[in-house]
Image 1 (cartoon, each protein chain N blue to C red):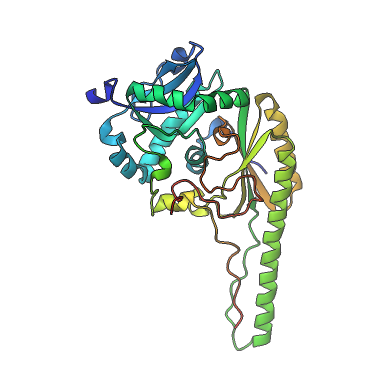
Image 2 (image 1 turned 135 degrees about the horizontal axis):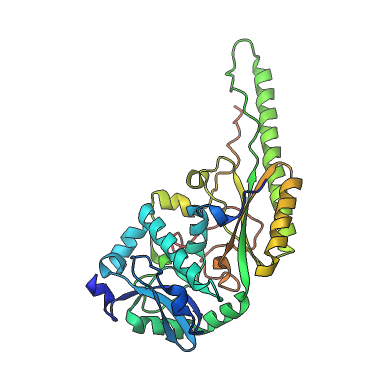
Amino acid sequence: MTTSPLAHREIALVDLLDRLLAGGVVITGDLTLRIADVDLVRIDLRALISSVNENVPSPWEEP
Amino acid sequence: MTEALRADGLQYAYAVVRDTGALDAALDGVHGVAGEPVRAVVHLGLAVVAGPVPAGEFDEGPLKERLEKLEWLERIARAHARVVDAAGADSGVVPVRLATVCRGEEGLRRMVETGRERFTEALDRLDGRVEWGVKVYAAAPPPAEPAAAPTAAVSGRDYLRRRRAERQASAERWGRSEDGARQVHEALCALAEQTRLHPPQDGRISGEADRNVLNAAYLLPRAESPAFAGRVEELARSSAGVRLELTGPWVPYSFVAPFSEDTAGAPDGGGGGPGADRPGRSGV
């Protein structure tokens, strides 16, 4: 089952940030800063932009 | 706000389009990240869509600080996207990376000079194209049996056997959903001019309970959107063990660079492996 395209609902922030933080032309030059230079937060944003790397729920460890 | 309106004040850049002269109408009434009116600054046949922003929020120090606040980030992300959408409503548009702030209109013009080749290359390549996002989730596992603690009634051997079976079932389930995701991706790649894999989303942020195993973007001619969406529907029906979600059409954010070389360290077009770093985590 797919959910319908965006027509009638607000874009999910997480989908938007996937694109805004990793897409778009990156310019060098006399900018105030480059987003790549930002130490994007240790808090929620860190979790947001880092991939889910918790693999399969940890298998039970046999003694 | 008056300082923000000076021509030599900070300018937030949203997107670059070809200068067709029609942009002012498209941007009429559109407001940017600071609530400012946006306009086109024309240079070398291109137009940068930009707006004056206050230094108190957008100069390097404050900007850096604010970008770390999710609420603020959401506000500017949505405003940025609104402006890009407006700028691209009737023409090809190349979005600029979020939080690109130049010093004065002179800075915007220098940006066009510096990036001219890349902008024109992208405008040509992306003309008439849209991006669609497809996410594949591992379908929810069957409700877990209550993790009955071993009691005296269950022998140690039974317990171990049961756990082994559970572990195996879980591994098979993940294996199936990854196979499913790969098949979906391969089928959709055949319809796309370019594809890009974003790192799978963290359920803690997306609010999705099911594990995200594919987070892909596909670039295609706008006219082919219905066929693409139809194929996604079809795959959603035929793929067991996974759930698909379609988003779009997007301005082709994920495809402004021909090979996505802009994301330091982010593998692109790989096998959907996890662990892709994103900007902000590089340079460690």
